[in-house]
Every structure is written in structure tokens, then in C-alpha cells.
Length: 302
Ligand code: 13P
Ligand code: SF4
Image (tube, rainbow, N blue to C red):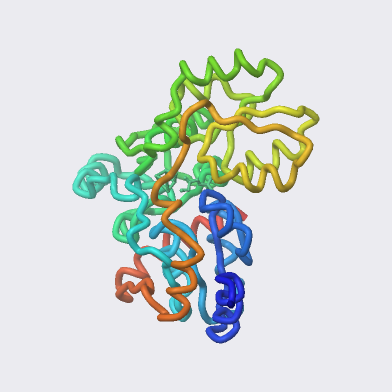
């Protein structure tokens, strides 16, 4: 009997396809991915892939970004219901009002946003390039959407600019509580605390390192310490353990689990390659409007 992995490999050749995955998807999906990384890496890598078809193992805004940057390619979503709730948490009427109020406003949009919301932005950012991109902007007033926590963290590092925040959040990262983190630190006093900036300020305050998923993986890999408490989604444990079999990684004691990322399975990858659907479709007007902030991010973050 052909295994699901053999089936996927065969279909990939037939369809001239590659699999691109985020660190939060299931381990078995990370294992077969051709490219794996944080949101910034994934947005760059999709612009260099020669194959005609990209299977995006992640949430829908990631597949949309791949399509915005590569309109000529077929972008397959193994599960189109895998959607990031934060990607929708912006009231676009408020953006219009604030643009009238502040002449020099720059709308800085976290890549965790729908294509529709990106249309309103001057530039996109990811957690690993937000500081560099915001610093490079000439504007004094920054409206940071949709994630309030990442916005506040970046604002703390750029005191010369005035930030306006939006009440968006990631339910996975904000569910990590100070109380649980303090308990984890008490139990593992030698561990370093590695935190994603989508977490609340009370968590960031206890961090030894704050960074994106790739940043967390690289920091742990380069560190001399042997134990780490990880404050982000549990999917990163796969790469952390692969790269560091001699080190120990602990969660904060409850499920740091993104239900949408976990919808991506090997079966769904095989199925989307077989049927060549669902694909990401955007009308050209919307695509070009959301292309501008994404390409500006790639230029400013270089
Ligand atoms: P990064 O991979 O850029 O750290 O993003 C984390 C995230 O929440 C993606 O949904
Ligand atoms: Fe969205 Fe949070 Fe899941 Fe990332 S981890 S996809 S920000 S809900």
C-alpha cells in the first residue's frame, strides 16, 4: 500500500509543487515541508520558488500573502477554514478617520491580516522585522494594526515615534498567564525564558529573549544554557528538539496551541494536490493594493 507521504511526493512531482510550512503546523507536516520558517522567511522564500504550485501549510493570510507576491503561481490551501482570528481584528473606518486626523500617519500592518486590511496599509511587518521597518519610516505617527501587543512592544523600542494602537490580539499568546509563567520559572530556575512579542507585557517583562519563532529557535540553538521555557505556540518544539537534542524545552504549563494551524494534515495536503483546490484567488485590483505594503516591507527589511 502506498503511504500518504509517497502519495504526496508523487503528486508534488506531477503538479510541479512544493510545500511551504510555518513552525506552528503539526510535526508530521513540518517533517515533509520543503521550506519551513517564520512569517518573514516564508514571505521572502515564496518569491524565489521556481515551481508552479505552492502548497501553503499555514493559516489563510499566509497563503494570501504568497498569492499577492506571486500572482502567476497556483497557491493551494490544504484547509481554507484555517484562519487566524487576529487577521480580521481591524475596523477600517477607524483607519480612514485617523488618516484625516494625522497628516503624516503611517499605517503599519502586521502580516497577520487579511488582504482586504492590507489594502489600507502603508507597509507590512512581521515580528522579526517590525523594529527595523518602523525605524526606517519617516513618519512620526504610527497606527499599528492589528496586534496591540506587538505594537506596544515595538513602540517601547522606538520612543521617538508616537503610536496609536488597535485592540487586536492572538488568543494563543495572550492566554499565557503571568501566574503560570512564574510557576514555570520557579520549577525550572536555570531555564531561560524565550517569548514571542504577541504575548502580553506582563510576560515580556519576564523574558530573557523576545523574538519571532525563528528568533526563538536560533536563540535557543546558540545559547549555552540547557533549559528553556517557551512562550509561543507549541509547534516550535519540533524544530527546537530537532536542532537541540541535548537541550530541554518546557511550555508554560497549559496548551499553547493554535487550533487553526493544527487543521493542516498530511491527508489534506494530499487531497489539495490531487484536486488542485482550494486555491487562493484575489481580484487584480485588490492584489495590487495589498502588494504595495508587502513589497515595501521586503525592501525596508533587507
Ligand atoms: P512569526 O513566525 O513571524 O514569529 O509569527 C508568529 C505567528 O503568530 C504566525 O501566525
Ligand atoms: Fe493567529 Fe495566533 Fe494562530 Fe498565529 S498563533 S495564526 S497569530 S491565532
